[in-house]
Length: 37
Image (cartoon, rainbow, N blue to C red; front, side, top):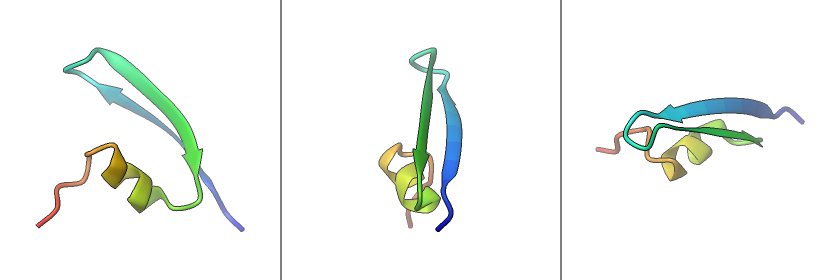
């Protein structure tokens, strides 16, 4: 089983988000970084 560690930065909040997940695409959607059609 693989997993991902990520560091995201919100320029509007001037804040970093650090986390891990086994479903990176779903996790990024929850952080609103992927625009949905």
